[in-house]
Image (cartoon, rainbow, N blue to C red; front, side, top):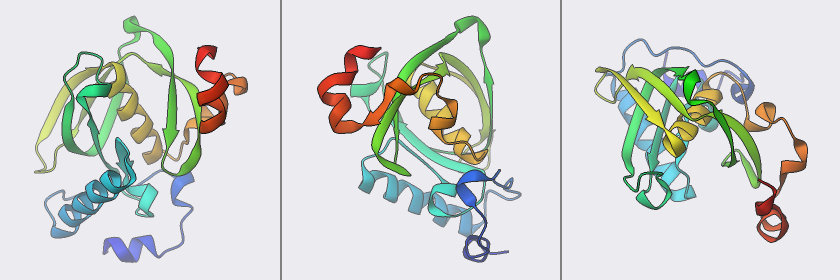
Length: 176
């Protein structure tokens, strides 16, 4: 079934679990990855999941600019297909500010695992297994949530730490 046909089926894409991708090497998947990367870049985001563009498939793209990386080294643009995220529980969780291209103008403090194991397929359909930490781990958890029908406010524990970007810029950053 074509990606566009799936997208037109009218599923509540952002609140549903996305389908596994059976063949990562198809031209349609390559085109979707390219479109996601271009859309994310145009919007100034650091990640974008297929369900955010009304395609209910387990795929996202992300990057971490060096200016936002915890270690000063960024993560180049990557596609992740059929991801599985496993928390490294010994590393604990932390609150951090998150926004979302699907919920413009707002952000919130969301608890996330500090370190995760990420497995899945890359853009060529090759399997990978790696550990990510800090901001990169946060971005991957956020995007993987989109594939499971979860939006970041659903992860919040304290709604006092949720608001409009302009208000939080003025008054809220010291809340963490």
